[in-house]
Length: 214
Image 1: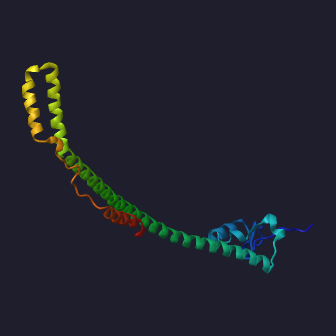
Image 2 (image 1 turned 60 degrees about the vertical axis):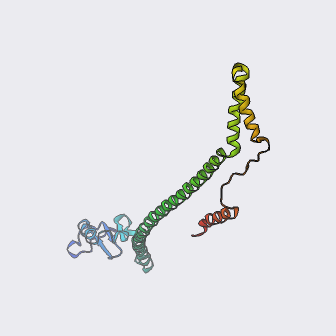
Image 3 (image 1 turned 180 degrees about the horizontal axis):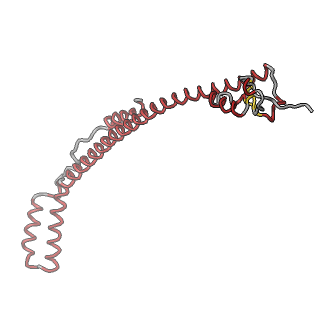
């Protein structure tokens, strides 16, 4: 029966049975040589190693060798590209972090700006409404109404409970009649200056244009 075992390619180990074959080195290796080989080439020849169980399938054609070499080159390229892409991505992430910080700063500035605008608008509205209320309360008509209400209450009390005060009230009423209150004219307009509608439109247009500045 033909002995199909292979011997180590190293001259001084030529009587020792080979445990693997490296198609890259084109050498059979015994166990001892295989350890040195793996340490020397690390994992660079890993794809080229064929164990003893597959010695019969060893093909020395250039086609197979080129295919293995191509696989090795492809892996090398992918690793190198992966390293480059990883470095590029790190730089992009750093730039993204800077952009995000800048975005947050811009958002805070916009929020502060619009808070100031809202506060100013609210204050302007409150001031105008308060001034209107004050003008309204101080109007001649309002003063007359309050004065008349007081006299009406006096008359009501006198009629119901204090007949001894009739003379005083009658004199007060006649004094009012002599002032001709029935024909007196009162200013019904609230004298306060507010912005014209056109001024409001100009302000609104500027606010609406804020979103178009970017």
